[in-house]
Length: 487
Length: 101
Image (tube, rainbow over all chains, first blue to last red; front, side):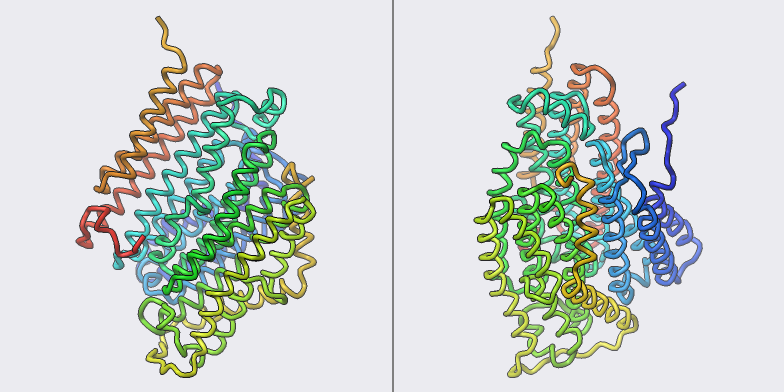
C-alpha cells in the first residue's frame, strides 16, 4: 500500500480556488445557455479575488513544501498569485464587451482561470516535473484562448503556430531536464543544486542539459532568437488575450527561468550567464529595431514586449538580492502597462471595426481623449519615463546592474529604451494628428463601460506605482528572498 | 550483449532531430503534429533510459506524465486543425500567411 502524500490544503488554496472555479463554470455552462457572459464574469471575478485573498492571507506564513515536496509555497508564489489574479481581473473587464464573450463566455473564463492556476503552480514548482505540468497546463489553455475567435482565420492560425512552437519549447525543456536527471539522479531543484555543487560543473551531460533547459524557457518567454512566434501570435490572438499574454505569460515564464537558473543551476552560472548576456543584448536591440518598421500596432507592441524581456534577463544575470527584487518589480510594473495598452487597442478596434494600424488611429485621440491620454502614459511607461511605474521598474533593474558590475549591460538597455521612443512617439503623434480626418465611427456597443474601467484601472496602477513605489518595492524584496539568490 | 546507455541516448537524439526537422520542414499541419509526437517520444526514451541507469522510478513516472500531456496537446492540435478545415483554410503551412511571419 502506497501512502498518500500529505496535502496542506490551505497552502494550495489559491490554485485550487481557480481550478474549482473553472470546473464549476464548465459544468454550469451546459445548463445555463445564453447567460454565459454574466455567469462567466461573476464566477471568474469571485475565483480570482478569492485566490488573491488566500494568497494575501498566506503572505505572513513561513515557506512550506507540500504534495510530497512537489510544490514550494513561499512569498514568491503569493506575489505571483496576486499579480496573475490582477491580470485576470483586468482581462475580464477588457473582454466583457467582446462578441465572443456573449456566445462562449463561460468557456473563455474557465480557460482563463486554468491559465491562472497553471501560472501560480509554475511559481510554486519545486521540481522539473511540477514545472513541466504547470507550464503545459497554462500553455495548452492559452493555445485555445489564442484561437478562441473561431470566425477569424488569423486567430486560428495564431493558435496553431503558438501550439507548434510552444510545444517545441516544452520538448526542448523536458529533454534538458532529462539530461540533468541523468547526471544528478533527481528532478528536484534543490537536489540538483546539491548534486551539482558537489560534483562540479564540468560534466558534458550537465552542460547539455543546462543549455537545452535555457533554450526551452527562452522559447516560452519569447526572447531572440526564439521569438519568431511572438509577433504572429500577438497579432492573431484576440486583443484582450494578447494583453493578458504579454503581461501574465512574461511573469510566469520569467519566474520559471528564475527558479530554474537561480535555485537549481547556480553552479552552472559560467555556462548560462554568458549565453543570457548575448541573448539579452540581441533581444533588447533587435527587438526594438524590429518594432520600428511595423505599422500594425499589435505587431509593434509585440516586438516592444520582446525588447522589454531583455530587462528581465538583465535582472536574472545580475542575480543576488538586488537583481531578483528588480526582476519581480519589473514584471509587476510591466503588467498594467501592457494590459492597458492592449485594452486601448481593443477599444480602437471596436470603434474602427478593423485592425489597429498607424493609419487607422490617425486623429482618433481627439475622439477618445481619455483612452488616448492613457495610451500615452502606457507608452511612456514602456520607454521608462518618470512618474510612471515603468520608470521605477527600469530604474531598479539598472541599479542592480550597476551594483552587480554589469554597467555596460545597463548602458545597452538605456540605448534600447531610446530606440523604443522612435516607435512609441509615432503612435502618440498619429493619435493626435490634427491634419488627419478621422473616418472612425464611435461605437456605442454595450460593454464599453467595463473596457473603459479596465483602462482607467491600469492608468491608476501605472501612476500610483510610479509615484509611490515604496510598498511594491518592499513586497518585491520580500518575495525575492524566496529564491536562493535573493537571500 | 547488453545495450549501454549511449545507444539509447543516440537513438533518442536521432529521433529528436527527425522530429524537429519534420516540424520545421513539413507543410501539412497533421504531419507537423506527428513530428511533435516523435520529439515527445524521443524525450520519453531518454527519460526511461536514464531512469534505468540512475535507479529508482522518477524518470519512468515523468515519462508517463509526458505521455498524458502529449495526449492533451494532440487533442488541442487536432481540434485546431478541424476548426481550420471548417473555416475552409488550406491545410498547408506555406499557405498560412494571414499573419506574415
